[in-house]
Length: 394
Image 1 (spheres, rainbow, N blue to C red):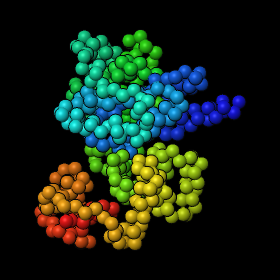
Image 2: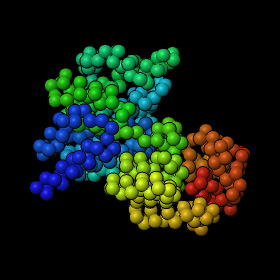
Image 3: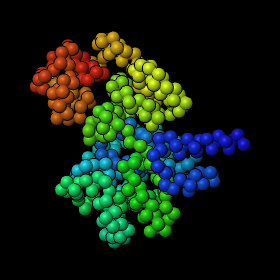
Image 4: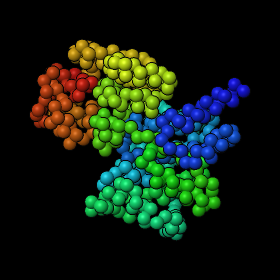
């Protein structure tokens, strides 16, 4: 009886924590209680080199299923990534070059392994099956949907109403994601709330191909550091690959209103403990202390306990005491132009981002705000980007 109670508790947590909607909840509950080993699918398009914390939400849910003994299927959308998903976009997403996608996905499995046990997972690139489809296959799939089904989606309707272009390519994307479910015979697919249309397409296509329709579990989206949805396109992300000090510092810059949401969606700290943090903040405790606990936990998850402790001490030394830390990375750059330096050290991803950060007073040299994007560094300069990143120039 105790074993059954524990399993029911885990199932209940699985279906509630970080869950926005379940289709079909009764069906999924019955499958989970039956003890059947289910095939749980999640796909991510490698449209940027890094997996960010927003994408960790469905990955953590995938791990929850894995820990209950189910087979998880992680699909890297090397084919769909080229085509481009418009689900969360207010303008047309350009097609990406295949070489860009190949470059981006090189470390995706390694990054995902920080959350799921990739050794026990089925991992595929969807070009394996999508590249083999012909026009007759696409016509068969497209016949399932009407044009109105697509253009009635909120973001598409807004674009059309404002006169923005909607390409036929975008119309085909849900077919591709849906066919992924057909090929891997998914029992359940996980995705963000912005993926709802694509997830339902999988159910429809599975029926066409004689399969039982997958159940769907959607997760909420999470805000990035600027309060908008976390997105690589906006540069407001915290990446799984961020160094411990950078990750800790970024989290400490998070708006207070998102602390509890981050704890709930991005960690597996017990909900009882999360509730305690929420009550402490409501009772007037300093949100900074709870935020520090959040930063500590997330750095621990993706690095180590030792790294979390060191990052915490670094933050306290550098920012709470307003000191430059004693130990900061020493860099002998290939080029001493500040823009090139910021790119080389990985603190920005492009020249335009570097210039934007400088224009927004986000870079200091020897404690003084830099205003000249053409500044040439000298050995001995201390470069500070934002509140948490320091470099000693050699």
